[in-house]
Amino acid sequence: MRLQGKVAVVTGAGTGIGQAIAVAFAEAGAAVVIDYVGKASVSEDTIRKIKALGGKSLGVEADISIQDDVNGLIQKTVVAFGKLDIFVNNAGIEKKIAFVDYPLEKWQKIFAVNLTGPFLCSQSAARQMILQGGGGRIINISSVHEDLPMPTNAPYCATKGGLRMLMRTIAVELAPHGITVNNIGPGAIYTPIDKDVESDTRLNDQILAEIPMGRWGKPEEVAQLAVYLASDAAGYVTGSTHFIDGGMLRNAGSL
Ligand code: BGC
Image 1: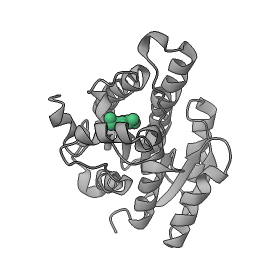
Image 2 (image 1 turned 180 degrees about the vertical axis):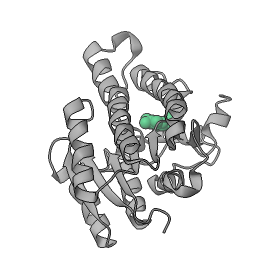
Image 3 (image 1 turned 180 degrees about the horizontal axis):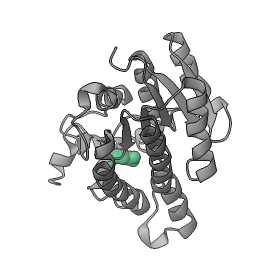
Image 4 (image 1 turned 135 degrees about the vertical axis):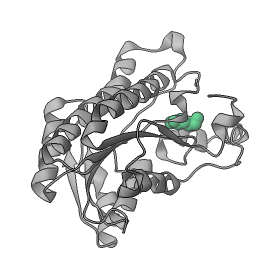
């Protein structure tokens, strides 16, 4: 098993891509901490799925935009499983509103979750990994929109663009410690974040027309890329975004 004996934290792992990553990590042999905000019930489905596989997991409540919560998340992980090898910054939100109408509070909330969260979590995780020695893995779930503009989604695109440069910069800083930092850039993946598009035939057809593969991606497909990046086999892979988008970016003529 590719992650046997490893300890991972996945933020926002209650549903969607985060849940698929948590389950795939457990399947690959890792103990997985499921970070959630609000009710513990958010993490229950993922924990149940991991239990059914005979895997180890723990739900921890932590708001990733609050430093004390993040430090607590890392501490609880180490208390429960003895160390931290892999941190996945997956939690993310978006809200589509025309730029000229975009309210400041919504912009700030999206930045808190999508960019301040990965800053605080990566910092706290890296401190723990350096303390332990032996390196580590930081993986950010970014988006094709770290490069591709998406009208009505300005703050989301701005945070993903920011996540690209956060990743690139800290990959260089953390390399001497054997810690790799990479982004995964999914395209249209069938998850709750896109329920507005999935449930509207016109919007659904529109997005499929943008994807050369002609279908939505599956969270499990993204999870397999995360397993590879988290594994020892990926020890020389750092500082890059790995897109998984059915060819969407090529179609857009981007990059
Ligand atoms: C966004 C989705 C969008 C997809 C492809 C994702 O990052 O969360 O809303 O459909 O990119 O454009």
